[in-house]
Length: 300
Image 1 (cartoon, rainbow, N blue to C red):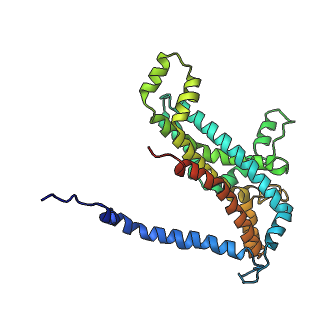
Image 2: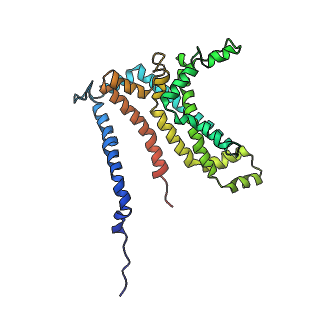
Image 3: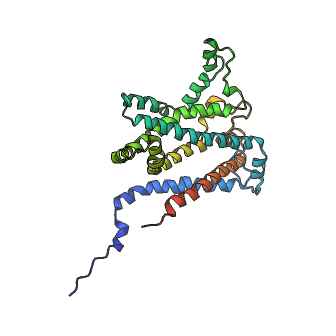
């Protein structure tokens, strides 16, 4: 009598059962709080809710007011400038520091700690520190003028044309150390034989990095980009600590716009509309990338 081969399909549901049970609270939190909160926000963005939510639908009126607001337009422009430059400089500076640290320099642990230390500080502390350092009365400008360069001028936080760059300086100071550590971990994962083969073939170091090492570190770069991008979208603390959105509205960002309308202007409908636009922007960028990165790959 032929033996029947055991079928594993009915038991797939019960594999790693303990892990699945343990993940139920996390899934419930994600569904109820994140997904539920998102739907609730989008729903009430079509109402004229003020201090409290109310079911008085006004269609797209809140969105029309939003895009007619010069303050919202300025916040979008600032986020675009801040985001693009933050991505570029964080990756470039972080990778260069990691490449230098990967040369087995002396006191590597000390330097790594020094570079990573700013990331341990809160954004409020970082913002206050750099508000002091960029203050023209007793900051960088004052120190350099005291050395004899009396015509030197550097007061980005007080100049509406370049204030966003002053905020960018503080953000790079705090976040570049984390990028360096991520990149350094990726570099340390590269097989030493690859470096040896490149040296034997006479390939210059910069070409080795550009054509061999960086493509091999693609997952590290993707992870780093996601971390940086998440920080860019929700930037708020630095702006409040350094400028409070000033001078005027010159350093306004979307997250501050949402907070001000929801909790200070007591206009929940407008705040919900701005939140929905931020969510839509993130979805337009993230969803196609996630599909191409994970869903569009051909399985071998």
